[in-house]
Image 1 (cartoon, rainbow, N blue to C red):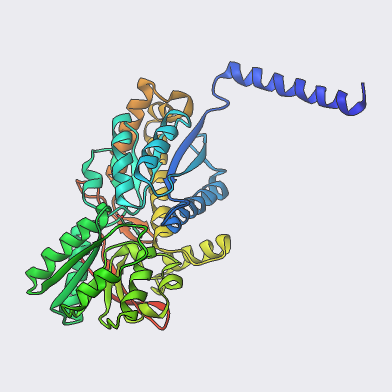
Image 2 (cartoon, helix red, strand yellow):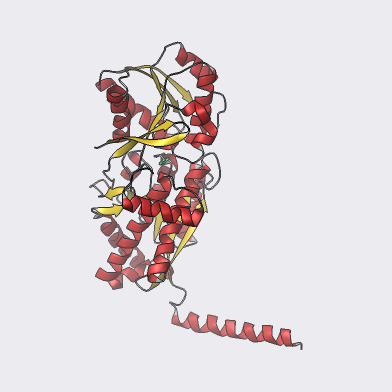
Length: 402
Ligand code: PHE
């Protein structure tokens, strides 16, 4: 037997012993597993990538400050790619629950995907925190579903007020993504608020995510001479819509919501987006020290500026860690039910319920996206900012309070 073979056999023996002794103890492999799902690929891949990085940054701090442990258990995050498809979101969340035995889930960004996966978490009694889904129906799925952001009835009002009062606009055309719950909802909330303010919607046109050619809809719109076009969609299509609108000679500003938020928005839309506005969860030029500190560490770690989704995901992870810590302190026995080995047991159900109760009491949490207090419907009440696009840059314009 060669030396290296003997060495390998020796090592295998040690490994086997280790497995045996841990096996007897029963808890050596116990972890606190947190699931995270998002569009790491697909039509709006920056949404999922930013979420993953925001969570990673928060986990990195937990590792640096507390050896990555809560209540004695090692925290591990499992991230899944749903490719931006609601059916796939449901599939990966089932995998996180059944295979990875997660005690809580962070995700999704897009409301349609959160809506597909939320009933599964609710049914399992496992809390789900969406960082950034704004459609009101998401948290209505049930009492285990939370979010870190404002909701669209407010966001729609923000842009309606901005159009009517700041831009003094009365005639708006809408172009919405008909297969996207967020887009359909935000178009409706904007319409209600804008018409209440005395404005009118001169036409409403439709598209579907993945479309490349919007000239027919834009030509219809042009004939009604709107003073602005409201596009409650995601960045990929928004960039193309802006370019084609300018090609057709439409000079009216284009307005939108948080779905525009992506490092790729300006790469896709270019100069066509100059003079346009959208509502968002933060402005990176806000001097708030907490936000600036976050942006600095994000940049140091990932080499680029965080978008609002990165900030919301970071806040979601922090709120979850804080809630887990509270449970570990207040009720260490119940807390043990969150350990990976307890998935599917009555102890897990009890612990999941307690964790839910603690998350629900989140009050004045100092987030990088603002102060987070959850209301009785598990939504955060926060101000929105309106960003202006000027000379190829996003700049802070206004804050609108609830
Ligand atoms: N609010 C959007 C939705 O509900 C998702 C989103 C949030 C996109 C933040 C970009 C930034 O679908």
